[in-house]
Length: 149
Image (cartoon, rainbow, N blue to C red; front, side, top):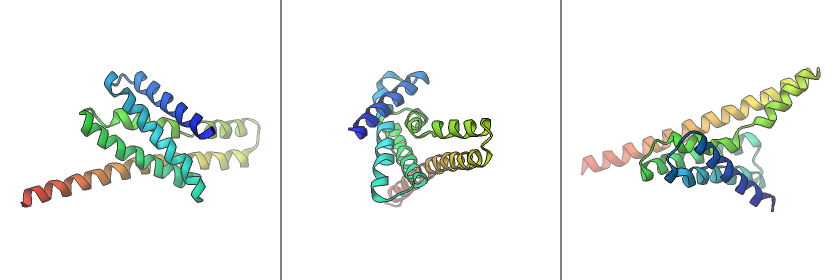
């Protein structure tokens, strides 16, 4: 039940961010689908023993590849989908807890939470870059085969 609630909220939040960034209305559902897919990967991987950083990296890579595919299919820039799809993965509560620990004078806990937030943010950035790179390499190899024929 919790997984279904998370999927529904990630779909709605991604669609809301797509609306906020003025994506074409015909692509709003695809933006929501990108966020839902990323959250699904993020939520399922812990059952296989993955840590939060790896889950975030895999989810960001999935969102990035899906964004590239959707951009070709719907003929809009891929940032429309990747920005909206990454929103459910952003570690906002973790950053809030880090700042709250600093304000309360718990510096060691604040540093630990801030480092964890930075690592999750780095995993998001790395996953986005990897997805774009994989898609570009695949497309280049596909076009090279066509030129060779």
